[in-house]
Image (cartoon, rainbow, N blue to C red; front, side, top):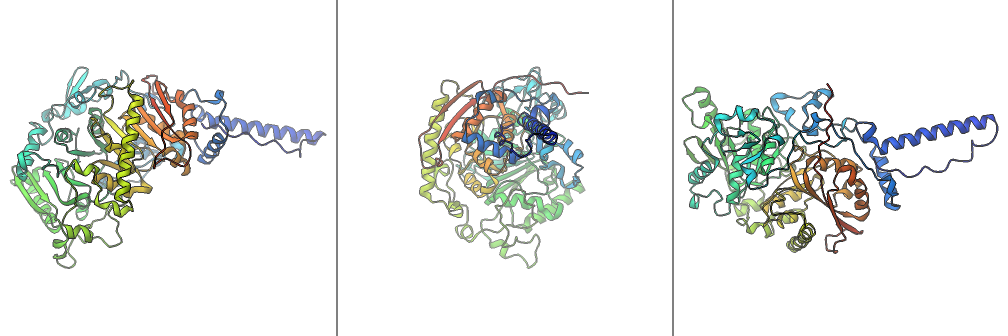
Length: 613
């Protein structure tokens, strides 16, 4: 799709007179025409083929464009639209791809629910259409309880879970009464019950700000996470794209923090010690498999003194011999992991993780599960295989007997203790906060005439650094998915220590979410970084379009040459509903070159061709 630099002038050799010369001239001319046609096809590749190929050619084209602006008539005016069958495409979680590539996946280990991205020749570089009748999503906070049926036309989950009050179809809307598989009478009452079990003040599960980050495994439509929000608790609600394939799609349409993921063979994309609580309510996970490897993964991401809430028949239905045996083995595993029961009542048990290494050191020699080796990095989490071992605490954590984090919201702006692990000073951290407060204030000023109070709910910072952009949005009624590039994955633990959430990702690949799930995307110097890696800028733009909602916004802050190039593609992307461009004030985070801020809004359109029979 990128324009390419002009071909060098042909050599005079071979262009002389005589028949041989004429034949050579004709052959060269034919070859030149073929090359020109090939370049034309590459530039308009999406119109002629399924993918934009050869990143090196694209890289050279971008460099040429940066040196000399393109003529206006070379701006791309259109991109093809995928047919309607791709309206919910998640490229790296597309099980149809498994069959095409003949991947040999272990179904018992849930490998088929993990990420498997298409190679470049199999990428669909076309715009993902909305489903028929798509409407601009209902705004938060109403969206917590109702969404448009047309936006997620999958009512089978409502009928399948009708007795559990997950969701109810009411004509053009789907309502969410707040029920779940385990808490039929509402997540709010269940949450109060958990707080009472732990004896927290005022029956509030936030424990005066000491419980902030929660991991909800097998979350359903994320009603548990929805009802934690009024307590200033943010849950990373996690579920696979499995037989209940639209769970997370419903959750995101509702405006609830959630993501697609599975406890399979690879570590979750979160650093160690990220959550104060993990929750499993009838999540249908075999915690005993492979020497308890899945429970040990939960242990890795729990903070010192963190809780694991387990609501399942195995915890209470001991009249059944199968449940009784599972409970016996799970209790034994938890004990060997040095977890102790904090409370057990009715249908729920809550374990608590130790604060220090003391219990680990008192275990018998060769006890199972073993301790992880000194060469294991507990924070490595991008495409890293799980290990069936216990992650010990560092000397510092063992000494202070905890995470040293302040209660929420103080921890949002206080320098986190793990800053020193990534070589950043407290002074630089505070300066970063101030800079992002100023930048975000400018963004909102630029958009003031176009946005309303609830224009945004689901926000993604695509290159989150230390989470300063998200922290500056605290007074807005939004949540932010902070994405840290895998090359800088250590920064994600700072984001979690601030009481925010996020994930590790490689933007040369597609993100694990449904189409049309974010209202606002923020990309700071991301395009320049991707270009340095040899990844196609057009691929990234098409991926942004896939995950951005109609009438959603993108804030792109990058070098002037990058912004100029992206502006040429706005009509093709249909991001030309509204735009604003400004040269921002220089600050300590500004790049060496000339920076620009481009804010654009995506149009609502519906031009999906029907799938061929």
